[in-house]
Structures are given as C-alpha cells and as structure tokens.
Length: 508
Ligand SMILES: Cc1ncc(COP(=O)(O)O)c(C=O)c1O
Image 1 (cartoon, rainbow, N blue to C red):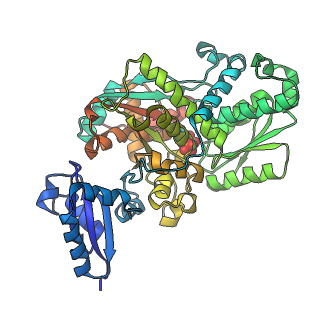
Image 2 (cartoon, protein in one colour; image 1 turned 90 degrees about the vertical axis):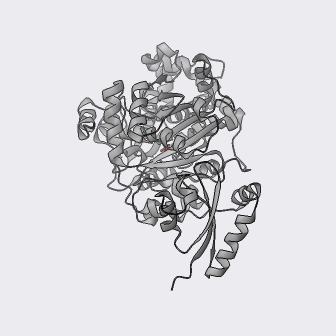
Image 3 (tube, protein in one colour; image 1 turned 30 degrees about the vertical axis):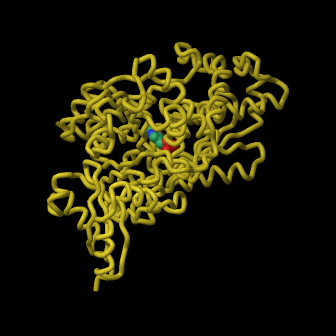
C-alpha cells in the first residue's frame, strides 16, 4: 500500500503558487507540465516544485493542502523560502534517467559565510599585473594585451536566432560570448586559475630566495638563474585535460619539473602537447578523481613538490575570479548597463567547479543581485547540481545515483564536486541545468557554421541557458537582460579533431 502522501506547492510560469495533494509527486508534476493536472496550471506552464511535505496518510496531507490554500501569497513565499531543504525528488528522478534538468536554487541570497572577500580578488589582480612583463616576454602572443591573459566579448546574433527558433523562445536583449576559448597560453578558462596559482608559487620561491621583490620588473624571471632556482621544485596536478595543459605549460616555461596526472577522459592530443612542452604525463585508466588523488600522493611524498588541488584550491578559485573584475570594464566599454532594470545573466560550464565558482564569486562581488549565474553540466556527470540539490557536495557522487559519468564533454567529466566551491555556490548561484551530449554536438556544429567560432564540446554546454531562463518566467526585466555564455575552451583543439566533432552532427 502507498504510504507516501504529499501536500505540495508548485511555482507556476507566472510566478504564482499552486497548492495540491498527491500520492505520486513525480507523476503529478509531469501531468501538470503536460497540461493534464489542473486548469489553473495548464494556463501557467511550466511549473516547478517549490515545496512539499510528506505524510503517511491521505487525510493529513489533504488537511495540510487546505492550510496552504488559506495562506496569503506572502506567507506562501515565506514558507517556501524558509522551508529548509526542498526535496528534489522530481529533478533527481529525471537526472537518474539522463534526462535534461533545469534546477532553480531555493537558497539563492540566503546568508552564508564565504571564506573570500573583494580584497582577495584585488590582490590576485595586482599579482597578475606584476607578472604581465614576464608573461609578455615568455608568451609573445600576449604582447597585444600587454601581458594580461584576457579574452574578448563578442555578440553572436546568428547563433541567437538559431537558439530562439530551435527552442521556440524569444530571447530578447543581447547575447554575448565570452571567448575564453581564445585565451593565451593554453586556450581555455584554465589559463586563468591554473596560470595564476603557478605564478604565485614562483613569486614566493623567488622572493624567499632573495632574488625578487614585488617592485622589480618581473620579466627577469625569464633569465636562466630563475629557471635553475625553479628546477629544484616540482608541480603536480590531476586533470581531465585543460587544467593539466595550463599548469604544464606555465610550469615548464618557468623551469619547474611538472607532472600531470591525466584521467581516462583526457584527449590524446592534450597529452601529446604536454609532453612536447616538457611535462611528464601519467595516464590512468580511471576517472578524474583517481588522477587527482595520485597527484596529491606524489606531492605528499616530496616536500619540494607543490600540488595544485583542483578540488579545493583557493589560489585557483581567486585566479578565476579576476575575470569578473575585468568584465566590469569590458561591459562599460561596450556601453552595457548592469543594474536592477538591466540584469546580467551568465552561463558557465561546470566540471569540479573551480573555474565557474571563482568567476561566479567575482561576478557577485562586482554586480551583487543584478547578476544571475547558472552552471551547465552534461546529463551524464551533473556533479555540482547533485551536490547543491542534496546539500551533500563532495559527499555524493554521480555514481551514487547510478550515472556513468561518461560524456563527450571531457572537461566536465567529473563525478564529485568541489566542497569548497559547492558550499560557496549554495547561496550565490541562481540555478543550474544539464545538457545532453547530442545537443552539445549540435551546438558545436551550428556555432561553427553560423559564426565561424570553434569550441570544444565542454564549452558548448551553456548555450541552452538563456532559453531556459526566459521560459522560466522567473525574472523581471528579462527583456532588458544581457546574456553571456562563457566559452571555456577550444582554440587548441587540432583541426582533424575539431572537424570530427563538427561532422558528428550536421544538423538542420
Ligand atoms: C573547457 C572546459 N570548460 C569548463 C571546465 C570546468 O571547469 P571546472 O572543472 O573548474 O569546473 C573545464 C574543466 O576542465 C574545461 O576544460
């Protein structure tokens, strides 16, 4: 006999609240979304679960439903907001079936102790400025940006048109691509945090050795005597690919010995490129977590080895956050206002969480409530969404709910999220969504065809975000919004590999 009886509230498309009773929550929400639940919800789709309470008998649940109905609108919203954990059974059941899920975070804006502050971002930015003369000399392609590793913001009108027609949605406002796929040094978002952490390490070693002070021209770091100094140290990292590339390239350039522990998902060309640059690559037949654990072990055994901890490094996090500070200026230069009536929406692909987490923290420091950030993950590896929904963070893995973690989005093939990032995102992130691998291929191929922009699969995960947000009917002033899709990588992908991605899906 079914002893699960629910009183529930749904948030409707027009932001109103509908109350009901059911003994099968998933089935009932599905019915509402198909227009078969109630007249009221039929006209206000899509609906999403906002709150529920579970009872062991029907009469108690129905009594509670009646109580919801008598509450004022404000009281209903209060109950939803303060109701603690919203049990996400509906979303979880879809997740378990590898279906795409759009999840809105009920804890957005709540009080939370965050272990970083604005000054930390400013300090990181200053450090990167000190290193600019070195970067310019060591990586001449950065002369044009005076040694600052930064990407452009470009509009993608044809892609916007395609997304509107494919998803049957009117995305008003501007749609930009943040081109981290073009970042110097390693062609991905990882050239932010990864490079920053190694530079910070080099600075400390050189200062401690009495060979550098902060007011020097850091281009001297290209001299052989510094390479000799750094060669006494090692750097180790575990990676799905792109973090390894950025750590490997910058470490080898400075003169460090560097080992990159690569998960089975890492692409062959990334391993080859790293070996070419002088890094030692160790391959594992296992997933990313094992690669990270091996990197950690290597560093534990060697006091001269620095471990770049993708699962919890503050330096990586802050290196990424600087992007937000620079974005303020880029938006000003493009005459884009960000305020209450002109909200900014940013969509970022998420793996373990460091890169999107650091950027989100920075964005919230810069724009406060006027920015809304969403993460995107593959349906086969939605680790951050799972950690946030359940509030279990690194204590739950996608394999715990039966998912295989296998995806063409190699950079996002992560089973367990960062605890550091997850606990910070719990109150900063507006929501998160998952995307099917087939859709990733379609987007990759269309973007190449319509805008001649080539991204790797992971970097295409965010493109369905604006449509989902518009359809959610959740945001006032959405018509005036600026949407930014964070293109996290792609320019280093070899041509034949890119062609094979594009040809996997020639779509209409
Ligand atoms: C292209 C790309 N995008 C996004 C990410 C996600 O970054 P994180 O793992 O820090 O969440 C990665 C990670 O390697 C990546 O390679």
